[in-house]
Amino acid sequence: MHERIRGLCTKRTPNALLIPTATYDRPDTVAQFERTYGRKLGGNAKVLLLIGRTPSKSEITKAIASADIIVVSGGNTLKLMRRWRKLSVDRLLLRAQRRGVVLAGSSAGAICWFDYGHSDSMAYYHPEEWAYIRVRGLGVIPATCCPHVLAEGRLGHFEGMIRKRGGIGIGIDNDCAILWRGESCEVMRVRRDAQAFRVSRRRGEVRTEVIEERGGARSLESLLAP
Image 1 (cartoon, rainbow, N blue to C red):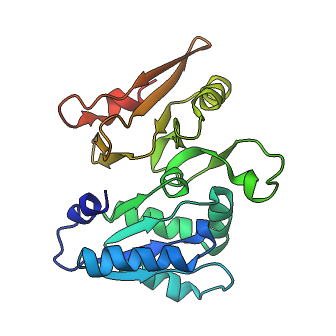
Image 2: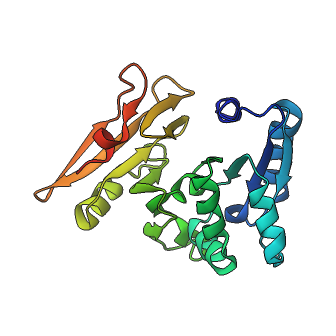
Image 3: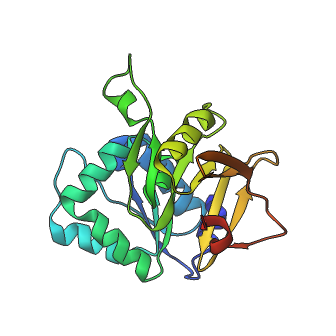
């Protein structure tokens, strides 16, 4: 997956930026990113740390403005979005999206690009008793995202969320990703049987369908239309 993400940037030595806010800036997350995007994939691996410190506005702006690839780690989506909005990182990321920066991430790092996400963030605050919640993201993709949809048994609850809230739901299982580019998208799989789903509500009924590859890319209109 990371090789494919790297390949989306045409620069010979791209600046790859990790924002590990959702993991509370864990050192092992940073180290893995530096190995992957630095030594293995031949980029300049940089990190923007936002937990336990408050960087200056100019530091945050410079880090995001100089990035060719931005990767967001998994973890606590609610914490991530609250911290970003407090520091205006959300606005800078939307600006990066408009200028064509490659944006990527897993779990919370996938949810953040959607209108909303199906999140287990409350488990970070109440590990003994919690429930899935709907977290508002950046709105780059007009849908609700659910990561780990089969691996963590989320599909039923996700369908209930779409039944209640409406809109289009995109469920992504482990070892699977969706590449959004321009007006089209395509499913990428590391494991052959990994799946992605489209969940929708029509006249009170929820419909769940596998997003087929269909030999390559498909239009966003066909995927996200009501």
